[in-house]
Length: 406
Image 1: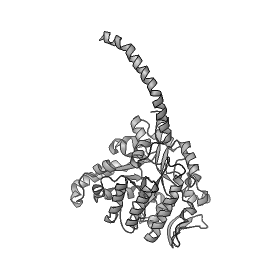
Image 2: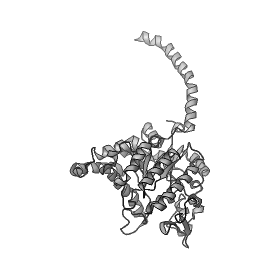
Image 3: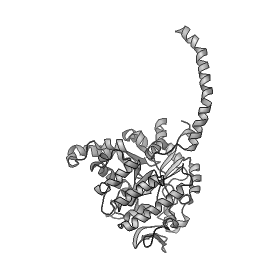
Image 4: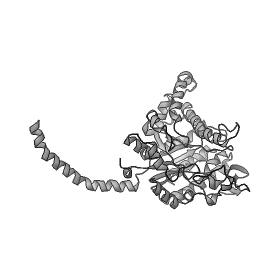
């Protein structure tokens, strides 16, 4: 397939929330960001620290947390994270048609226990993100922050984000929130609202010892914690959503697991299927094999350089794989993400490549066809009648000869 005709969708990009994103949050719940003498910025809500990191370094491709001399402040972060026009230019450079956007700072409000703080923060973030996406609503799409500390408020915010702001997804962390896992029955109204609103639910981890994270109770090492938290937390969330019956009770719920790599899926589903044979009686809501629930309702985001993609795609299902740039975070590949992904997909069938590049994400999120491809189709349709006439004339000229030969 001609690359110019392929849809390219970034299923997991990030914004970088400026200080004024929280301007409408009432005191004392408005996030306060201060920078210490070592270059770390501390995000605090009503006395509770939710994040401590050099924010500009976090949100600049190539940033290194191991080099304090290079630490950047929030205001020095890569421009496209907070400026949509700059982002659109970077998307043009990469050849990305559309992007679904997740927060940077906003991933860590999961650490809050107080709904009185979480609800206005989520609302303020979603309003700011909507204004960001308004720069080009055909290319930029929001994933809503939900105040899961208050499930009823989360339902209201999901519906507002979908029907008033036009968002295509809502994100949740895989970690416990207020002591509740994603499989907790308290969240049933949230999943019902997502089904009714045709809103995809994105499970997205963040690496921090402030939010309860698998591995955080072991000897601390940033590399180990980051590797374990993103992948293992999402593996556990996948198992819980299946085993505790969330997907069984909500068959129209669409769930995507982001930024956790993709190679774990075949192993994990096989392992869960095998375990279900021995321990399935402890899961009374389980009506299908775990792998069948995943095939029916779940998607996975592969890393752009993940070399197992070609080998494992048949086990996952070519229609269930998306990719995310992680732009503009420190570990993102920019520029060159799409080119790297294309090299990773060398050897895959053209249809499979097209699915992973964009068609799968467009279906998952329910995205409209981008104007660039609409215009291309219209041009092709204007040319088509001429081509059809030429083909008919060729057939008519050849037909008598073929008939004689037969």
